[in-house]
Length: 184
Image 1 (cartoon, rainbow, N blue to C red):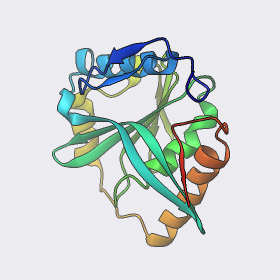
Image 2 (image 1 turned 45 degrees about the vertical axis):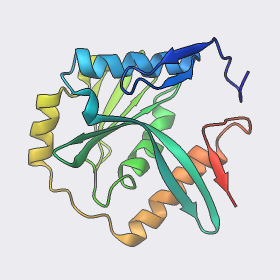
Image 3 (image 1 turned 180 degrees about the horizontal axis):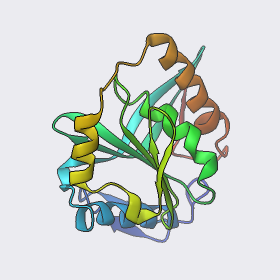
């Protein structure tokens, strides 16, 4: 056991070839990665798994992992957040992450539990679709990115979004969650 996840052995990351602990959550992440490549036409190099994101809320700091960051032509077009259970409770922190992972508003945020998904217009928070099939394919994300203005995130907005993300992802994390790194 590590943290609160039962470790079932080791597995090889579909995107990177890295050897990871085999947990039920990681099996879902691998399923999502395969889905993106095999069903949605993304190239493995366009999908960055487990990207670190530094969050700061006043004097408190932590690093969280973004499950998947999809980058096309050098720009982040989509962030995907995985978590078991309810999707609704993951919408707001996913939107916050979409405003912190780059200096601009990322067009698409996806929350998924590996069986279902909600696709969000990250700027407005409007739900664009439901289900894994609704995750934009590479050509659809290209279109969405071409129509997107990539407005810079104002510094004060970034501060507020970091507080939201910290509240959900760090303060709301299980104390034994080893994917959250609280910094001194």
